[in-house]
Amino acid sequence: MDAVGSFFKELLLSFIPIFVAVDAIGILPIILGLAEGMDKREQSKMLRYAVLTALGLGLGFVALGKLILSVLGISEPHFLVAGGLILLLLASRNLLIGERRETSSPADRETMGVFPIGVPLVVGPAVLTTLLVLIDRYPVAPVLLAFVVNLAAAWLILSQSARIARLLGKGGLGAASKIAMLLLAAIAVRMIHRGVVQLIESGTSLL
Image (cartoon, rainbow, N blue to C red; front, top):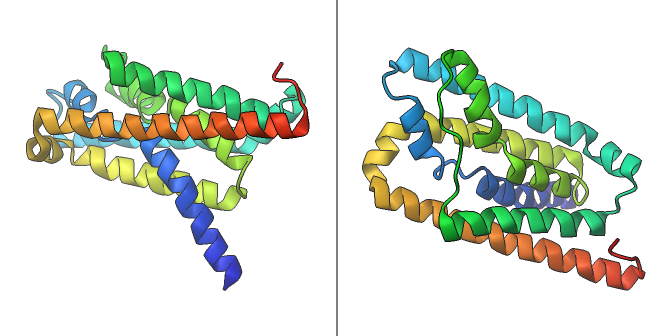
C-alpha cells in the first residue's frame, strides 16, 4: 500500500507542473485561429497529428534526458537552476508582455498539426524542461504516465476549443492563461531555490 500511495503522490507531483507547462487553455485562441475554415474532420486530424508529435518528442526526452545530462556532466542542481531560469523567463514574458507564438499556417494542414501545434504549442521548451527535471527527481513510470494523461487532457480541451471559448469568453481565456503562467513562475522559483541550496550544501561551483 505504501508503494501504491508513493506512486500516486509522485504521479500527482509530476502531473501538476506538466499541466501548467502545457497550458492548453492558453493556446486555445491560437488553435481556434489555425483551425478557422476547417471542418470537424480536418480539425480532428490536425489535433491527432499534434498530439502524436508531442507524445513522440516528449517520450524521446524522457528516454534520453538522463543520458544527455550524464554525457554533458550536468548535475541535478545545475539543471534545476538552468531549467528554473528558462521556465521563469518564459512565464515572465507571458505575464508581462504576452507570449508571442508563431501562428502562420502552412499550406499542408497535416503539417500544421506537427508544427506549430504539436511543437512548440503543445510541447515546447517549458514542457521539455519540466520533463527533464521531473525524471531526475522521480521514477520514470509516474512521470511518463503524468505526461500521457496531460496529453490526453490537452487533446480533450483542444478538441472542444470552440465550446470552451464560448463558455469562458476572450477575457476568461486570457485570465486562465495568466494564472497558469503565474503558477509556472512559482514552480520555476522553487526549482532555482532547490538547485542553489543543493549546490551550496555540496560545495559545488555554479559554473
